[in-house]
Image (cartoon, rainbow, N blue to C red; front, side, top):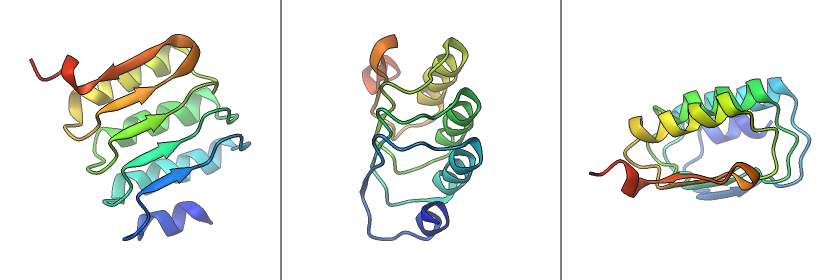
Length: 115
C-alpha cells in the first residue's frame, strides 16, 4: 500500500501516479498520508480517475502538508467545489507553490497569496 509507505517516507521527493484508477478509499488514504509526509515535494495525478470526494479530501490535507510544492491534477474529475477547495488550500499552505488542474485552468501559484 503506497499510502502507508508515504506516511513514513524520508527519501521520495516526486511521485507520479498518472493514469491510475483510484477509488475513493485509496485517495482518502493518500490524503491522510499527505498530512504526515514531510519529504514529498511533487505529486502528479494527471489523467487519473480521482473522484470529487477524493479530490476534496486531498485539498483538505494540503492545508496542513508542509512539503508539497507542486500538485498536478489535470484531467481528473475536478468539480467546481473541489476547485474552490484547492484554491483555499493554497491560502493556508505556505509551501505549496503551484496546482496544475488542466481543463478548469491553472488553480494558482504562490504569488497570488504573497501580497
